[in-house]
Amino acid sequence: MTATPIPGAADDALTAAAATTAPLTRAEKKALKAADPEHVPFGTNLAWNVRGLSMAANVLLLGYFSIYATDALGMSPALLGSLMLASKVFDGFTDLIAGWLIDRTHTRFGRARPYELMLIGLWVTTWALFSTPEMSMTGKAAWVFVCYSLINSVFATFANINQTLYTALAFPSRVAMGKVAAFGGVLISFGAIVIAIVVPIALAWAGKDGGRWSLFALAFGAVFLLMGLSRFIFVKETVTQAADTTEKVTVREIIAMLKDNRYIWMILIIGVVAAIAGNTGASAYYFTYIVGNLGMQSVTAGVAIVIVPTIMLVPWLMKRFRLTRIIVVGQLLVVAAGIVNYIANGNLVLLVIATLISGLGTLPGTYMQGILVIDCSTYNEWKGHRRLESIMGAFTSFAAKIGAGISLWLAGQILAGAGYDGTLETQSASASSAITILFAVFPAVGALIAAGLYWFLDLDARLPQINADLAERRGQTDEEAEETETAPTVAEPVTEAGGDPYPGTEA
Image (cartoon, rainbow, N blue to C red; front, side, top):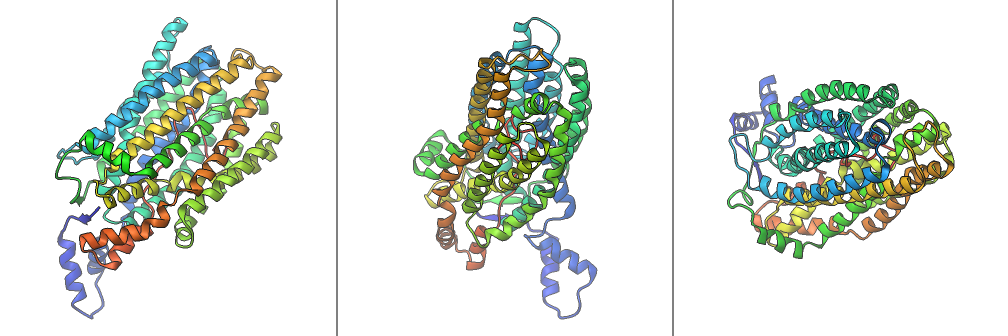
């Protein structure tokens, strides 16, 4: 991709400043900074990542939907799991359509930016989901399926899939993208932990009362909707792309790309495995029935805050180690955390230790995996195809949603088979064992499989030569080619609804 910032007055200031040896004035320094493609203003950085925090808040809230459905609505886990699986299958296919549409979009607001307005529908429908009216179980099931499908298949789909293209059009260099990613990793992690402290306390207050769930969802959603619209308002598309703006994407191009790019298939498999392991929604059940108090989830969420600054080390580590190797080590830490969680049996001290270990292990993959998707687009270009960033994002989102659907369905079948009853205050021994397996064993097994797959993903090792070849085709300098391989891309935590409601518990 040849990313060129739109020229402006700052270029003249840069030239003038370079022609003199006199000390620079404040205005000249400001102009130099503005002309630097690696510079990201704090306001832009904040507006971009506050939107990510809004999406994270939505995921965190939806992570409690399973226990709302079984305990407040009285829905059986098996029925709920089947509804979630059907919704996710439908949702996965809409991802592919959304990616195709976004890559074909051209409006006065830009190509990807208009889809930020999907956040309005996302939060309104989320409130409706947690406000399911009192009716027959068939009526409740229909209401849940429609609302859940709208949230994930329409609003969240477009809001997530536009990210790869929007990132490429908003930031002129991968160094700038890396700065935004690092800042976002810290902001969103800290913010998500604060949210994860507050939400369990509020939902412990809500208990099995559907009216209280609805009230909390309304207040919570209103705040984060207003925050989420900041990216659309303040961050414009300022980069032109020579390769992908001349013609609209065709299905034939997509099929040809899939035949040539084996790396995207590896990432898709990893996405499915990770989603199956980490989207059972078991945390809420575990703290409600094993620990005995959902509000205590705030304690483990709170201690995870000490891990967040470590995300700033990832760009430094990437200069010394391959990103996939960093992620492999992280996944092995998640395996260790799963073992600790399994033996904890509700012991809060051991759960805190497991949270710290798992949180440290999940951060690199959660916030930096987006670079691998961008690298797949670079590989597409190297193989003679168009980059297709949005299509790449669509396929990875498709894999995550299919995996999440399978995860929720399996969790429902396992809980139902073990005799789980949401109307009871205390669960049977078999149901408690099933909850522990979903909470501890599933994430550990998934992380172990993911670690093995990442080990054989060698695209990041080939990237320097690929970038050099592309630079030669484009006529870039060595320095420009090097820039494209040194910095991570912007990433947001991608967790499907029903998954881990805070960092560090599930894979």
